[in-house]
Each structure stands twice: as structure tokens, then as C-alpha cells.
Length: 67
Image (tube, rainbow, N blue to C red; front, side, top):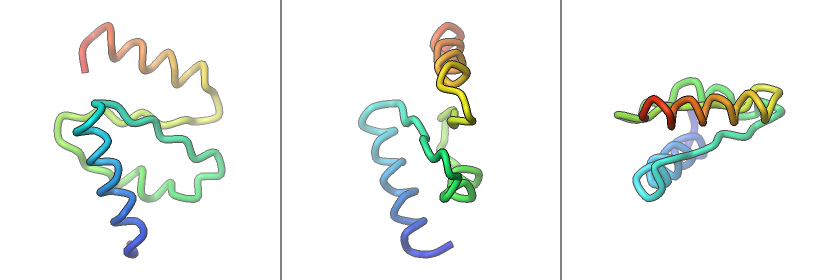
């Protein structure tokens, strides 16, 4: 992975620390490899996979059962 991938990882880690939630939207899967290799402690990673409704349902389920 290159420097840009590392930048993305650091940005996501900061957003998780600041907001507790990051939504990964990459419909062309340009950065799919980055998303698949993310390792953030105590964090659920939910990715857009062709359906906003499915993603929203997953987020809602996580909120119901606790992150």
C-alpha cells in the first residue's frame, strides 16, 4: 500500500475517534483494498455494497445491539 492508502487509514482513524462512525462510500471500489484491510480497535466497519437501504439497516442493527 502506498502513502495515499496510509493517509486514508489515518483519516478514518481520526474520524472514528472524533465521531464514532465512518461510512465507507466507494461505489467503484477504487479503494476496496484499503477498506478490506482496515483494522480499528473496537470499531465495526460497514461498507456500501450496492444498496443504501442495506447499509442503513446494518447501521440501525448495530445501534440496537450496541457498537
